[in-house]
Amino acid sequence: MADNVVSVFTFKSVEMILEVGGPQLWTLDRVRAKACKYGVICRNAHYPDVEGPETHGSAFMIGKVSDVVPSTEPDGPWLILFSEYALCSVGNQWEGRNPVRFRTTDDYDFDFKELEFQPMPEVNAGEAATLKGRGLTIAEAKAGLSLAFGVDPSAIEITIRA
Image (cartoon, rainbow, N blue to C red; front, side):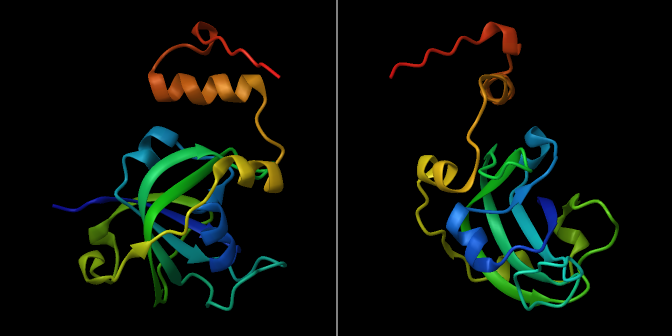
């Protein structure tokens, strides 16, 4: 049986992805992404500020999805966290314009079980958010918590103590 995969198209470097714990995106279905076993990261080499040498459309990193959390970047609402990752170089693994695609392991030209996964470096999400992003607004925190717990955002109360 095939496993679910969230595939993303990015200009970000391997180093940046490892630094924050996974790929960060603009928009995706968090529940659907969190249900995926793997994340496949493909290179967008046509982006003006591309950070990696991989060829356009090639898969260069595969991760085991552990969670989907608010992004540390102001332009993206979600960060797909990986528990483990494997580097690879498999050409022509991307098609389409949307930077997020949901697929299965059967849709790829390689065997996921043959990849040599290694643990992700430890990331302090609080530090990453402070250093890299704008943080969360109360509304964004409520929206994320409502998804995680399956309740309406109006049912969530947040208290901040300084």
